[in-house]
Length: 138
Image (cartoon, rainbow, N blue to C red; front, side):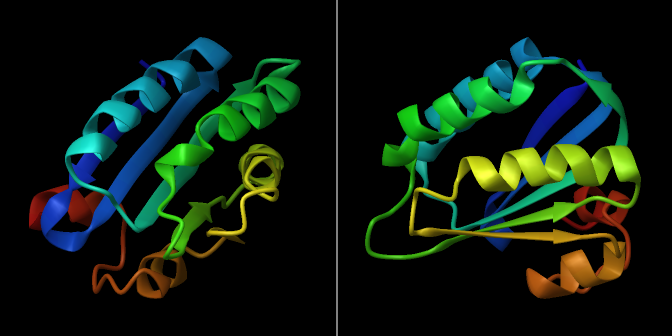
């Protein structure tokens, strides 16, 4: 699957990794998994790694906005959720912009799009220099 999801509970971090050509069905599958796990333990920080994205479906933007609005209840109203998008390529930045904009109507979500991997991790309080080191250290 071009989208994978990992919960790094000891870090209060959800890691979503996109790879290859991303379809809406892939994103919906991850959102369903995130929804189920979120009920068990809310996560305040998310790292979305878009470094492996090569392309994405047309019509993606409108549907992602709708999904975000439908799942606004996932966010804790009394606290902020930080979503950091690691987007080092033009294609990755395009999809990051769509994903980040999808949360604009939800005040408790703060989205940042960064093209520097170590900066994306540092903003989330992680000491690793590369996303690939997270799963090893988790």
